[in-house]
Image (cartoon, protein in one colour):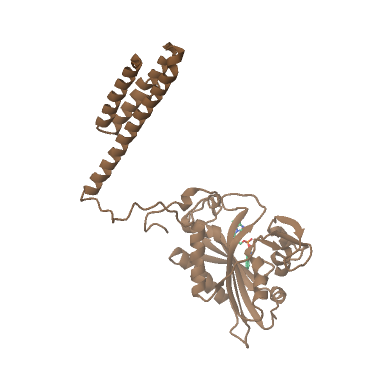
Amino acid sequence: MTPPPWKAEIDALVVELLAAAAAAPDAAALRAIEVDALGKKGSVTALSKGIAALPAEARRDYGAAVTAARASVEAALAARGEGMRADRLAAELADRSFDETLPGAPAPSGAVHPLALVQAQLEDVFRSMGFSVLDYPEVDSEYSNFEALNIPSWHPARDMQDTFWLEPFADADGAPGRAHLLRTHTSAGQVRTMHRFPNQPIRAVFPGRVFRYEAVDASHEHTFHQVEGLMIDRAPPEGPGVSVGHLLFAMRTLLEAVFGEAVEVRLRPGYFPFVEPGFELDIRCRVCRGAGCQVCKYSGWLELLPCGLIHPNVLRMGGFDPARWQGWAFGLGLSRLVMMRHQIRDIRLLLGGDARFVAPVAAGSAG
Ligand code: FA5
């Protein structure tokens, strides 16, 4: 039986395309052949349209022949592409300047957030002075956050820290229905620490997030970080005692470690129901160097570090007899310290999710 005339036509086209694919010098030429043959307006695609002109009994064979033609062209193109890749690899391997033992390109990595960086620095300084670093829950009881700190519910000092209150629930220790809150300050860990280390000298810091229901601006956040410091020791004549001098030494040591130089500070009397006497330690604003800016509210000073000697009532709440034990505590505004350290003009940038805060920095500029 003589083959139909279209058979020779299809075969000729396939032979021509296979030869072209085999001779394609590069990927671009190969792609051009693919488009010319298999693309929307390609020569192989056009064959399909010829089916309409054929008598019904020839259409099945014609369709099968076109499908086979397309498959062999596709296979030839794929084979040539694979051949090119193999040639390229062989050429690269033959190239003596290629050293496959060299390390690859470094993978992009992140950097430590300034808050975490300064917190780690502070923890190191305090560890070097014999302090433990402790961690306490962000959801705490009204008792730890206020009552144990000599701030009963009627006390006007409650208004100093606007509070996010939670629905009452039972504590893990089974105490029913106590009021809970998002801790407004890391001082909530003070009496917890005293209960944890009863009747023994304590040196501890506890950093963490705290929360206040307050208006946000360049230097106030509703969520910010503090570091609490606590030192308790036996009072004379049983022990060395604890003085404001120790407190100031610790404060200066931490500020010098963070800023790498002596920092101008001033001490003002400050009122907190859980310390007596209480102080506010301010540092010279390092964003404007004292000239006045929105961070320091144009005063040149930034309130950073309230502190004082632990109030006898708080020692008592913690199980320490104030006649035999003395202590100091401070509550450092870590977020503000980081702003000073890295000259950040707006506190909202710290937790705003700006990826540049954790972008890799060039070696040597991490500080
Ligand atoms: C307290 O939170 C006391 N617990 C500190 C304390 C501890 C006093 C131990 C005595 C002994 P105050 O509310 O002032 O105090 O906050 C402490 C520091 O947190 C401030 O000096 C400031 O640096 C920082 N701070 C306070 N409110 C904000 C805020 N909204 N945003 C950012 N930082 C804040």
